[in-house]
Length: 323
Image (cartoon, rainbow, N blue to C red; front, side, top):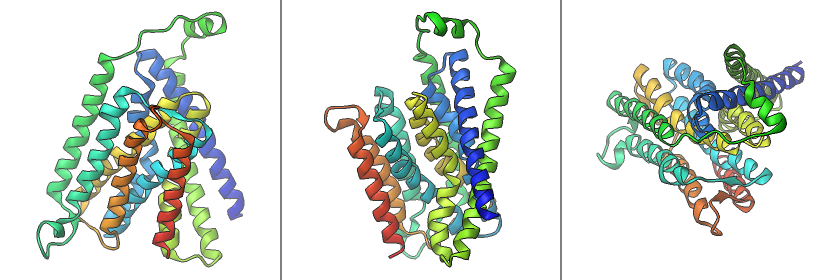
């Protein structure tokens, strides 16, 4: 039964990713908003809903390390595994805006998390935690970053391209607003419920096989809550919308740190518990390496060999955790 539900969850994830990608692309076309910005905002926040639910419930239950660990693990998963897999399928081109603005935003959020969560580095004997003052900084920064990104998109919105044939016919008949909304909301619902179904049953199978709780938390919880990002990024890439795939990952990572941890710390200050500075440094490393990919081999892209490197780093990190 668990296997059947597992496959059902996977089917919902794939269907949801397909609907969300098509609906979001139609939204971008209608309002002449770059697909990267749609990925950075609507898709990113939507696919981060599982992380939001898990972290908020963990904070309510007093399990701060689970709330933080979920975000840390998800961000590492997003860059090293999701972008690694995407780059293997098709190199991911980076725009000047990605290099000057978007990826540095993600790196700045990762650095901020490291600084806010390591109080003992600056005050001997102080507990490492994300307090209520920290949450104000996080939430305020998230709002400012999203406003800046959207305004930047408005200044650089592309002119509609000339089309012909079937493409011209499609352009004359844009998707109806109600259908666009149904596809986006329905896609998000499929991703969220499918992800929960997949995660619950994968966890049940792992426990029945005798896998320890710590390994389940490291792999299935962080990976399971990131399944929507994985599915939506892969579907976007296969549909030739690499901007949306990249925006989804960068936007999800920013939302995970500034929005989700900021909201979780509003409920209760988050102590680090079993999460170490090494884990936070790996999050920062992922952002730095993503930025450096723009300057390798004189190509502004995440190339296939860099995808292999990302996957190798992720495997090494998991090996370090369960050593």
